[in-house]
Length: 273
Image (tube, rainbow, N blue to C red; front, top):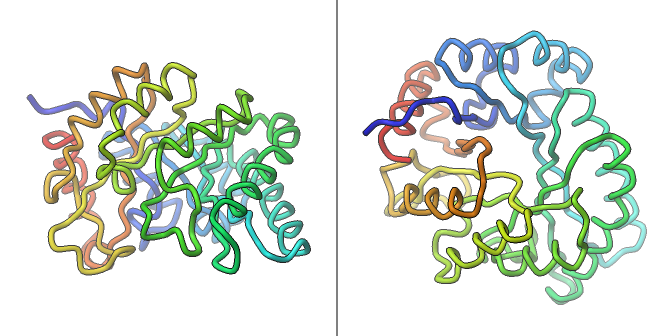
């Protein structure tokens, strides 16, 4: 039975050719209820204006994307990363986003364990500022193919270990099916998130077969090999009741008429998620 759009959120990066103002208008007309805003979209119109555009729309702002990139072999660069993240938290608050998604980063000149230590230390140092701004932080584990520079957090188990060690309600996890579908421990780790009330976001798309670009060839739900409905059932069993966020990076889809693409997104969501 087709799903309704009541819990559908779309990331602005998914319809990258559209301005923030256009995306807000088009999503609302399509019946989409939520929007997650990438920094480039807000920066293009100015953060104060972005906040006004979003406040005047019927859409709920779900998250701001993306912070992180904490590890560096240089102490100066680690300090600069913290300054960048404090600014991102401020930007999230300005546009009315309650959550900042963290792509945590990695430093190829050092061990993954050292990068993970620096990630945890960096997040812990942001908690007070994030609390003051009423912006939660969500660690997003990335596929192991990104362990060189994008993230040393590559499984949901690692993300759970870190959030449980930090043990603060300001810090949780974003589950993205593109990065985690391969993990044979995924169901148990999602339930573990629920047991600790750590699941703050759920991102969906599909893994196309064959994938021609590991970054810029994500698929619509139902056109690849990820069992999105199964993973959704685990997320819901864990108690998650938030939005299901469509996040697609695709040169192919960015080249389409974005109105046509948005229709395909809502169709795929109704029938394959």
